Image (cartoon, rainbow, N blue to C red; front, top):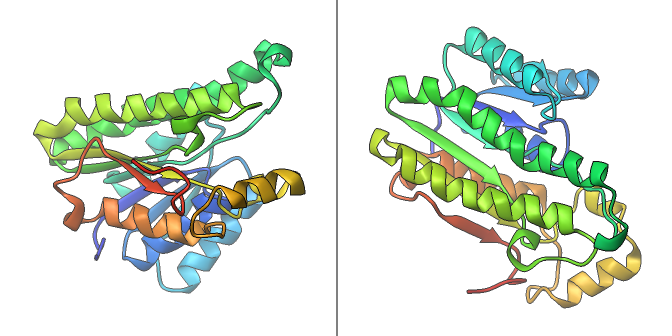
Length: 247
């Protein structure tokens, strides 16, 4: 699944699933625009990619800020000439029970996890329309499909991403632009490391494969959906969850 000649932009690229996606996309031959808030981590990632013979450039971007999104994507297109592949991966959590959830915690999660995907898609779609080819991949979550106590904001944002994926897929299909989502289950990342042992043990009991997933397993799915081989798939939610949710 060669991505030679393609240019990808990944948000939330400095760690976890985003970082794994960048490494895997670069190995497949894509030039990668890496976007996140942490300049140092981005620079280290770019150095790793270029040292291995790949192409990458860093763009500091807080996806909760519309102007930073516009400026960052404009700079990425100026640097690489186009964007073929967009991976909307950036995400945060502010977990608490619904009755205790502050409006600020609701707004920040929805802005970062959902509104940013709409804004990023809007900014790259012009480039994709010109070349009549594109791949938009939204990283949602199993909890956007089944809900989770204490995560009303997170679950709502991830469920919203699924709706955004399907609407975008219908709008852009006639121009050979696909839009799909990947719904990870329980993945080993810095975000999940902060969860309680009790929660982790409970989650493992819900996974038929009996283990957590890795960021690299999500990244492999991203590369597939970004490839020519996935050209007849659009509006789809790919579950990568170890069997945590079926059907």
